[in-house]
Image 1: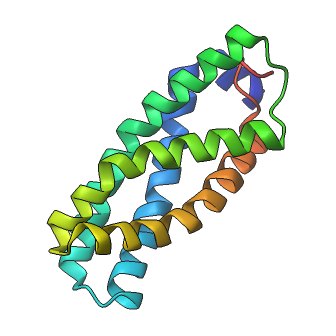
Image 2 (image 1 turned 90 degrees about the horizontal axis):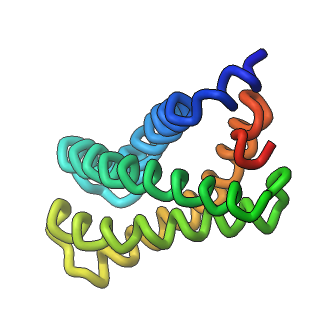
Length: 146
């Protein structure tokens, strides 16, 4: 039932995924920036929300494009290679937008922002693969890959 419900509603499927993914992402990012890197709670929270906003927009664009490519290629299922490509493409794209944002919001230079984002990237590459896999197991694959 859930699988068919989301297969016929790709926009709703994306919205549900993004809300869950970004909620967890903000919580993790605030924890890392404030606790491990020593940035204040206020600046950490604002930075995490800004990063989430950028990532949410990119997530929607990336998933729409990825699913269109799957559909055009006639994909049936998502193997490890497809999931890895999905995660790498998403994280690579989001880095282009977030490095300057981190530098501005945390008052660090671009190299420091790259180091911060690079550290977060390592976590989020794994997190993205796991999160999309769990989401697909719970809610079923999108129609483009079913």
